Image (cartoon, helix red, strand yellow):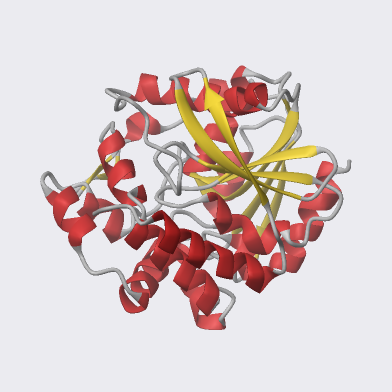
Length: 310
């Protein structure tokens, strides 16, 4: 697929207009490895870095940050996602991925001359947030995690994740037609069934996600980044689990907002995993899925604002 930046920007702009926000754009040069990333900044106040999930982009936080007044929300397009170019090399093993996870947010802060910031993350971004908080507690003021995070035990690996990791499937997966119907079906399978059914995942949001997958190389880059974490039969590879000792070492104030309908693991998984992080707060949100801030943006934004101000 050839990236069409203009068409992607058009879809993204329509999403921002829908939520009533006009972000500013910055390009940052990172150190480890040497690469560039794009961030979009919304609002003024204490800095908060937002780290999205797999095959996604910074604008996925739009319906949350438009409700967070008094904060400087820094929405990162992770390397290879959105308009950020991919890393110069793939991850050969989980240890390399863990090192990347520990360094990414710190390098963003360094590039923006920020000593420390709050971090809000979800899914694969949650893995980055937890690793960062454990390795660099002096750089993270508060940590907020939405939904199941990579690194937590998984109750069920969604079929699209299993299918996409079959050898030779990358080309087929990324060449499949991308339209509202296929994207909506995928969203339902990866934990946003309720958000789609309720209309919380609006037409503008669907169109943005279609634009992300159709007009950028986000999915291809994510599938090719490595290491292989999912298999068709066994699902998620246990080597990606964050050791309990690492979780217990986290001293950053941490809030989990976790949906009862998250297909990767509901309330039981949430209590077991959050219990390993000392003094962590857990807000289990009824009738919410893998992206709780989309299912109930008012509750999510109020909880985040209160926690970050504490």
